[in-house]
Image (cartoon, rainbow, N blue to C red; front, top):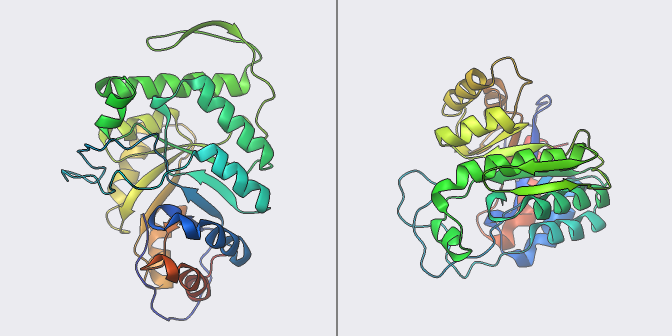
Length: 292
């Protein structure tokens, strides 16, 4: 997710809309400098992409009907909880998100423990973005059934939430089965860190409405985001409102206002063309649009 280059226009107040920095369009050699500068400038959050492994032979894409993955298998990838824990130790204010964590590829004990630990060491700054995954060969590589991933992710979310909140947890489900366990300490954020579900498919929207505290969409315009927001509201019914998070092309403060009016609460941005230009891009965006 990201934004295009920002034209020099007059700054204006933009209400409560938040800005997160998507690190996925950045060479990892620049991660630390960009995160430090994002915190200094007042960006609300930084978001780390996540995969467990990239098989050499890959197909599919998260972008509609594209046949080819948007990244080569040689793309550098880090353990999300370890890297964000490191970032937590060198920052004090900026929130830290996964963009997105492939929950179904792990046992919920592993995921829940990583979330709990990161939330505690960051002082309650973690945002748990999750997805059901689009990369079938990644599931094949770990010996799991790609075609049952949706049900597996749903059950994993249920187990994680109980581990974060209940004193004793016992579970007997389709994919996970265990007797009574205890899981301490609990995360700082109550009842747990926000679970933000990524994806554009009907299944992802249903998962968001049923289990999520928010939704992470792909790149959108203020016009294109209206339909999924409407669908989410219909699926959510009388439940608590969802936080809406998307990437989008921002050329002026008016664009940001239009996103806000459409119902977006957080924009994920990458205001640079090339990684060496990232620091200047962050500063220009902050000065032009206003992020604090």
